Length: 119
Length: 119
Image 1 (cartoon, rainbow over the protein chains, first blue to last red):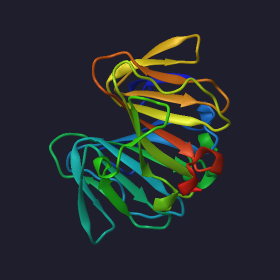
Image 2: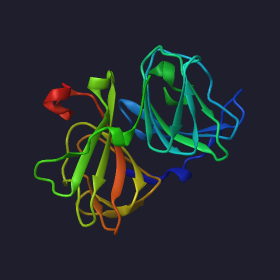
Image 3: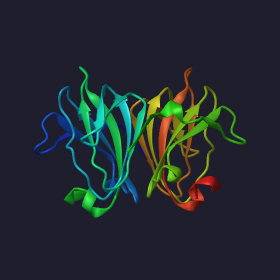
């Protein structure tokens, strides 16, 4: 059993995505056979990319507030909001508040969803 | 995209497990193809079962405090703790604090891990 505070995992910057960091809390390097847990932190005024891919997301908002959008409809999110983004649906999370927007985002451990070091 | 506060999902009691509830936040009924997100709430003095099974858990502690144990070693957990429980490892979460111990627990959507209505 691997037990650690998520702060023990480095927050990595993401190329081309200012104000957003990712922590790979549990993934293939830890032995995860099926899915990975990441923690994102999005600074006020910043956002994850508006994009789609052929794997799903399961998201839980930990702190902060913002909107989720598919590029057309915007839905408010805040601590306690859960999001299921099916494969191939466009999605983006934007921090519209004044605090950090922090959320868990789980993905399947399929190679195309993982950084090279996790494949 | 399914977006909802986790409180919108009913907290179900678990037979034989007093003081513990589960919310199936995202699972096969919502279309999850690979893994499910559940939210557990454990009352003070109560615990999840000490058991093992052939699928993994990925856990994130949201609120409260307690210990995780394999039946021998006890490790403190609190908000922000992540746990990876590999398949077939014994595990239990006990609420040793005075507030509700609330955590996310993700599992793969293999039939043996799911209630009959989710298979």
